[in-house]
Image (cartoon, rainbow, N blue to C red):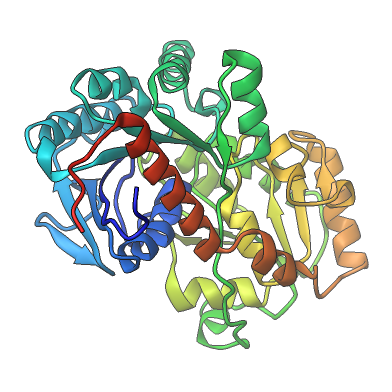
Length: 379
């Protein structure tokens, strides 16, 4: 297949872009405009409630909002199912479907039965997330089975995920990591003043307020420290629940804790730029974009020792996941031996470059269409 052929890609498994909270959303917001800039037609089917009601374009990507119920246990699968039938009715408009994450992958067998080639990106074993009960975990595991058995091609965002697929399903995947753009590092300004923060005198954690992010451990560890440093938690909850309300309640008890809610753009950039230590206490990650972002700001890092984090940081920069006492000790050490840089930017530029990631994804698309034997390409 000629490399100058225009591809027509449908995308499912994402809440929406731009500026929608979530690792998959950040991934898609960075990836698809680059593929659109290469001349491809990208249609991303977003979930109503996260994006504007009417279709719109974002940096060359056509975003089409589709209905979905706003309930965490049903939202992804119902939206993806609706999307499959929407795409099937317009089959000649698309060359392939790209599905993100194992939950939406439940519908891959249906898509294949309708003659739609499918690329699936595995962002992590979501059944390890603490928010899911026994039934939800079984459903997610079955989604992983569906992806392993029926996807035309699979992309794994970490080597750990690739090994999991080989071990559990004898199914190889192409390793294409998450990426991050090198940011401008901003001086202290209006946003540090907004939250009454001093440069290099606060811990920073970023993410959704869900149990697997481990913010409860971080709050418990921070409460055991007598310091003038502050703890900043930047993130909100997609679905307000007992956990997110509990985190906010516990944070409010400590005057040194700052809860910013979901922030983006220059505000998040300034908060990242001036942090003293970035902390990621997660129990579950695929390949954490937020950790790549911290490295891109050359921040010192402290992360839980789960496999995904260990792909990005050294053992000296980790603590045993869930061990509040160990985390507390590491936070105290960070204050006593404050560092100003992690030398992460050079590594980001060489290993986690979105331009290279887009090129590799394009190669997967062309291989998928070649395998499917499609000839209805436009030039």
